[in-house]
Length: 303
Image (tube, rainbow, N blue to C red; front, side, top):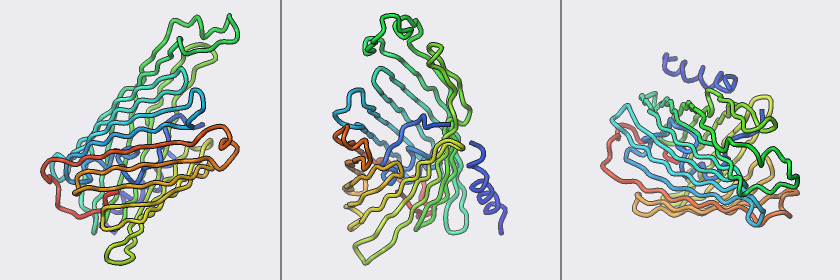
């Protein structure tokens, strides 16, 4: 067994232990842009890629979360790639804006490619006091003068890709920061770990199945597995769905045009008690590939 393979196996075994409730956004279209959860996927298409994603959670529910993502990544050469992302989140009176960027380093391994990445950025937290509804005139939220804070974030990722499959892991909030607005609204970030994988299963010359899974957890506190499967026709159209352990099921559709443009839509519904409280969740994804092919040394899986 080569030292590269030994190194990668050790990382996959011990990474989950490096990482107490979920604090970060949960999206469902992982198969459409793996870079959203793993910075080691930067440059994976061999061309520059820009993606836009918007998720409106729990339609009809007052103060429901909504998320918007903008990401860009590109290969620099055969070994290095750069990635950048901006993420905005709103939940009732709370707003969060996160901007980060990083580098991924890649090396051939057996019949595939192994990549490592480190990303760093700033998260800005804000409270819109005009959106607060207080039932108590003496509520301390009404008198706080600290409406925003900035936190430092880091993320690590590792990803192995071959022609038929991928396997990766990432750790978000690698260096936890503390935050606090008033005495009863303070805390510390915790690490979030993702372990994910996927493959392609040819059915005939035109059809293939594309299953993938993502295990997301905060050690000793939170476990959130998700499975997704899609049926792809001619490398252009995909229909499928998925299920999350928390009780959310979804259906999705994707179309790819000229290998440069991707459009996907998802509708998600709760199967538990929350189903009676909202009208479902909508998620829209747009992806664009552009520029010359910069990294073509390996033909690998590209979700």
